[in-house]
Image 1 (tube, helix red, strand yellow):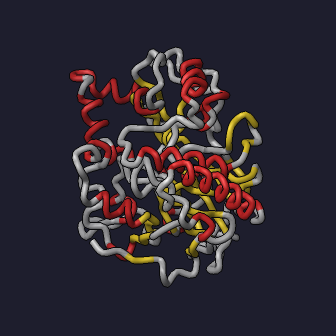
Image 2: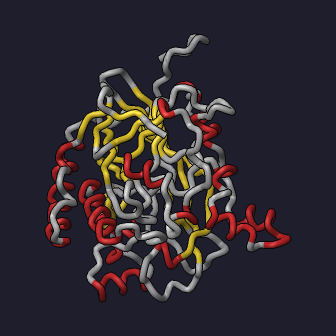
Image 3: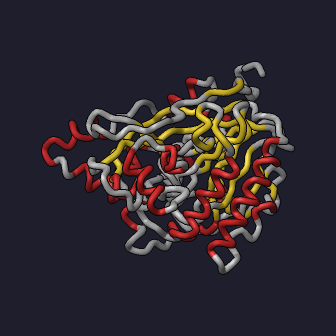
Length: 367
């Protein structure tokens, strides 16, 4: 499937400050560059005004193996943690006016076909339906979240995911067989992620939704070949590792620069020395690890480490708890009754900044 490049876009512009971060053959040199360039990008993002609107909603909670969430950490006695998948609705100024971006708009019904989670669900046997409701409760849908802001599906300009694990985008963008629910939206995705998703190896296959990107109109796909700015106060930063085409969403908010990805599962993973989870903190003390990888696939483990350190350099400290960086993970660890003894030291939860901008509609909506 051939997709569009960004070359003719008036909104999407190259972000050159991160060029060559991953080019040096020395891992220590790459890490030093990531910290330096990350701090530079933080300062550049702080020069922007906060975005027009930023709001996140909890969509669904899912069980996730602890051994992946906190790679190599021993002593966390529950085999699973709970992670909260959120959608982020972001509006920002651009050369073409105010644009609306949805970050991580998951489609839980379709995404259940992802092999790993399908097998986990089927392990409940005759209690599968009850198990799904108890272990993976859904709070709301993407359309309900959008409606809660007063926006409409046709107002959405862009969709993006930090990577395409578990995602089925056909319901949003449509196929030759069915129209999409977001008639004007385009998917922003790293070219490496798009190509990889169509050419999976066995270690990758359990985490990608079968046929999740099949038969989507290539005109609805915008391929990115590196880090980019999206208008005022929003950037997509290539952060390879968790997947080869992983990227992070960088947003200037009233609380500083917030960075979103799934390279880690929450603030504890990005500042393990401050974690109140004893095994996490002790592992960081003993190993010297600056971060703890979310390691279910480990496509590029060293680069993921460098990417996570770069992410927190870009984010800076969180205004809500200065022990931790401003890392607002797309799948954030949360406490849950079924997994006692594991709860985050700090979590961001749902966030809301600014007021939504309403594009003109035939019905006469005001701006």
